[in-house]
Length: 72
Ligand SMILES: [Zn+2]
Image (cartoon, rainbow, N blue to C red; front, side, top):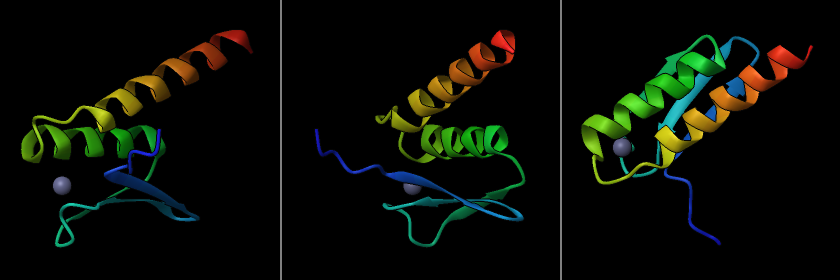
């Protein structure tokens, strides 16, 4: 599986930049990863409604972190 990821989240010390490979003119910026996933999913829903990768990634992220939080 070598499908390119369309929407990338790039962490930095101050926040998370959201970049879409299909939309070089667009980028988002959020302070936390959950918020960044939400922003990526929102962009995908509005601009790329046939694609679900960002929203699946957001779901996986949320599930992973919910599981981790309940295990601690
Ligand atoms: Zn886009």
